[in-house]
Amino acid sequence: MDVKEIIHKMQVTTKEDIDLVINAYTFAQEAHKEHKRYSGEPYFIHLFETAKNLADLGMDGTVIAAGLLHDTLEDVGVKEETIEKEFGAEILFLIQGVTKLGKLKYRGAKRHTESLRKFFVAMAQDIRVLIIKLTDRLHNMRTLQYVPEHKRKRIAMETLEIYAPLAYRLGMRRVHRELEDLSFPYVYPEEYKKTKKVLRERSKHLEERVTKILHALKKNLAKEGVTNFMTDYRVKGSYSLYQKLLRKNMDIEQVYDISAIRIVVPTVADCYRVLGIIHEFWRPLPGRIKDYIALPKPNGYRSLHTTVFTGDGNFVEMQIRTEEMHREAEYGIASHFIYKEVQKSGWRRPVSPNLVWLRNLLPLYSPAALQGQRDREKFQDVPQWIKHLANEQNKVRNNGFMENLRSDFFVHRVFVFTPKGDVVDLPIDSSPVDFAYAIHSEIGDHVSAAKVNGKLVTLDTPLKNGDILEIITKPSAKPSKKWLDFSKTIAAKQHIRSYLELHKTR
Ligand code: MN
Image (cartoon, rainbow, N blue to C red):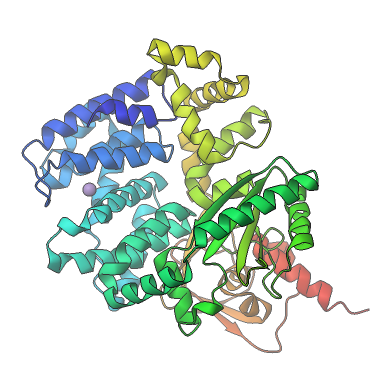
């Protein structure tokens, strides 16, 4: 454990940020020195790992410091005044937020609704609190085997029911998937074993097959003059596969996206072009072509999907997207850290660097990492645009871009609830119509009335944080042109438009 490991991962590295992280590191190490984890290891490991996860996500020094200090109030009795004096009001505020969230315990369906609601209202003050809490939980889940057995299931259940969906809401798919897959064996051990077995049988020789397909794909794209792309491959997470199997009567033959190949290209036009090329070479499965670019999923997910026969009796899903879509799909809210800066500078990156690559590069070339002579030499070879980006980052950081991020998400979003307590997040000033389409397009297409907190409202009523919505549908109800004036989500607008197009009266 060395504070350098954290600093090297940081993407925003001003001197203030580094000093702050070092101070928090030293303070936390001292505060927790007598404190042990269930595993018998020093408790500090947990704080260290949480901080590293935050740095990986692109968080700045303030958030990383709060991550290091997040258990000082609750676990080792450090006084709030001390934190405020040493680290300032902002960090104290973040730690208080994390501590508060830690007190909400999920104990089963009945209390679920209420807890979830409180949970959201409490955290809605600052997205950074939530990101710290998610990385804290990620490390706790990674080490759950050391926790006494009688506690494991509750923690895993809470992770599955509260934290994982939250990560999903924030679009943090990587975190979402890992939280789910870590919880799954504890919450549903039998189902987990079954799913694993099914997956093992089904994915025999998968690697080999995918390598072949990838090879053919690259060749075919090149043949058509497409050379500027990046490919990536993933196997479906075990919990997500289980969920799907449940919907398909446990018939694995019905699951078409166990494995998926991603193709990342520079522009939206390229996406459609690549889709065309793929269909020229491989026959698509009927009904499996999905255009989430024209019609994004309610959580904002965008990509083109198609499942194709590979000619050896198998099929594979292909997901085609731009870099921006890819970044958002993997890191969600956290992806906006880098992207926004690029936009602000009005400066375009050449070729098609995918984000993972970019994220790995940046810390390497950040000023903090350049203390060694060898690294400095390395910096000479760095393309100009990376240096530019590294500098922009520090500049924008100084203009308070964390502030922008904060407001961006929460000032521009509202969280509302279904009568069952499910949370739906929408852009600010969204209407019941947006809500209805976020639930399902069929519901959206047949909204006849809406109740907010039990009272009938007009369909253009702007929704507020914490509202409970009930949508009343009628088979005869249908979208009207007026809806376009007050709907806010892309999903709603696109569904309304396509409905109107389809039912045009001549
Ligand atoms: Mn913790």
